[in-house]
Image 1 (cartoon, helix red, strand yellow):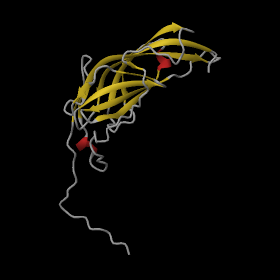
Image 2 (cartoon, rainbow, N blue to C red):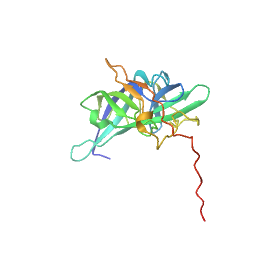
Image 3 (tube, rainbow, N blue to C red):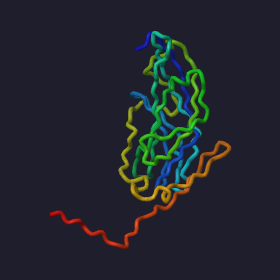
Image 4 (cartoon, one colour):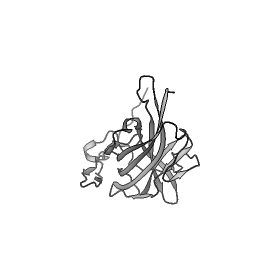
Length: 213
């Protein structure tokens, strides 16, 4: 623990998410820390044909930053988890983004695009803005939160839906043939994705098994 601490109220605004799925879902963004959990209020619909969805919601949480003896603030990790909600079937984690919010205590982040981690769609992205408001050195404890969409119940972020959401792994096929076409967004709009068709191998000839003697 550092020798000095300062409390900040952080606002993380989710502008849009780009994600290629095979079935229609609704997306939820969760910010969970210890027993505190906040999430977007609206469950935004994402269809396979669009490949992106506008969110435009802010998550607010109080965080305490600790300063070391050299006057430098220590890292403060924040993880945003993206959950897909499949109607009448459950939820499933489809990716996350890890942030060091200590970087944004004085300088705001405006509409920065991040790649999603732990996501089968390697081109999935999320657009975020981050701002911080100092609250003083001893205004609140680190385990307290004031948040939009706040829930006092500690819940996981993995979800309970076990079905497939992404295209099957086509390793070995031509990347160009199955790569989706991305149409860049403009005027603050998210990009659109048009899924490509996989170049399936020729199944005309049977493959003879190898006999091992």
